[in-house]
Image (tube, rainbow, N blue to C red; front, side, top):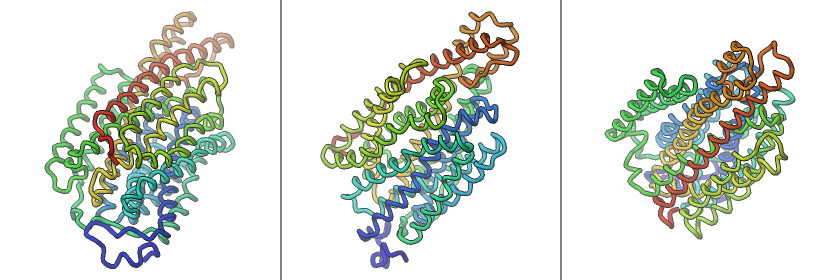
Length: 521
């Protein structure tokens, strides 16, 4: 038995272990922060690495999308099951198992010889994340009294952001000086540290009233439905919305998700109990999450291609460009957790997306010149301020809108909403960017009077977006003109995408204002 709850665990209440001794709480926060940082570092560094992976593997946009969405598909689909497993079999046990899976599959990612293997390893990595991510917040919820959770969640969000703020910079430096493969090895020492703390200090907790049987049908339908939707959306970028394959996949995905909801409504052990959504605060917070994290996921997916392939940043410089965003979340999230106690969550959750939306709109302004400080820095500051205002209040609203015994499920549902939003964002924003890029490129290439076969070959590779390189056999002047046309067409697609993303942030603010009670949390 750990020192944390040695006295309290003898006769646990019906829902979970008693709140732990004050001396154990810093260890609980340390382990959950490190585990979350591991997942956050991985996500941010992989985004920076995508342009380099594209160059090494000669990958098209669809393959790059799958490197991201393979992870988020499994994470978003199974995080509800991960939360339920923690409630049923022990939150620390499932948390530790997730950390082990994440570490092992990170090594598999580092050793991947091709994009297909990398995509498979990333999907397996998502399974580990689906266990450890809901476990982090559920462990905090089980270990801290309700009146201390706002600050605890704020500390978790802030410290996790601070520990990962240097992730893109360090990862970019590793990419520039070693290889993109080195970024996955970061997870090994972090995993060992988390496991050492967990085994020594984190108490076990579970829902003793949880159903004996898990919702296997729900998990399978979620994976299948979201997988078909993702496949269809990525196919849209290659074939267009009118193509039979992409349209059929989208319809099939929607049909499976409809069946998923019907099944969940009837099952007593549903992985996503629909009765939780009777709470307006819970429903509103998850609706806000969908729009807010769609905007964030779409912006962070496209931005590295602009920075590295159009603006000419190195991977290190591209990673450093994200520092203001991450540092502001880290420094201010605890303060926003404190403000929840004074102002409630609705004001913060309305203002935050508005500020972040202004940042996304600013990303549409830069061309191919100008200092970072006058182009991308202001946008990063607004994005960081907006998200910092949201992270802790959003988490507090979700966790306090349900009974304590549903802590794992509540965390799982909200994490699923965030991951599904990012999953859809990468698929949709990538597809829209390709759709916008190709006609813009065609117009620019037509003005160059290139040989028809050269022009057709370039348009046939439009899925590479800004990574599209001039073919061999062109003169230096023609090559430079093609490169300028590619960059110009990408910037057109990028700007429209960023303005649409800003609109999604505005929708998030509207949802918060209309659905969340003034004193929620």
